[in-house]
Image 1: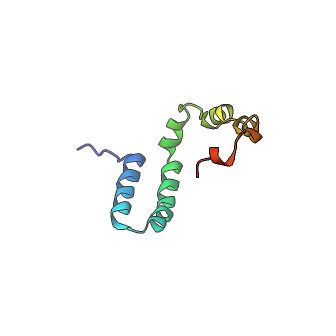
Image 2: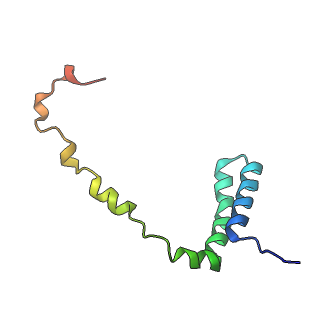
Image 3: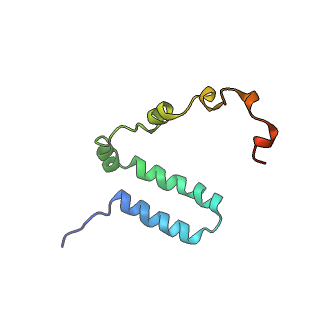
Length: 87
């Protein structure tokens, strides 16, 4: 008989589903999720697999694409009258 060990990811998903089904208060639910995430991220298999994950570049892309405050300002603020503004 072969014994198959359940993965950390599967355990996390099952526990999270149980938690979200049982705990109706969102704040308490997210607080209770912290130890589940800790266990998932501490798993040696997850750590090993994560070494091959791509680098996250979301922050870098956001910095490059975000307009500077001066680019959002009108070139000539006096050109707009109060009637031109939307309430």
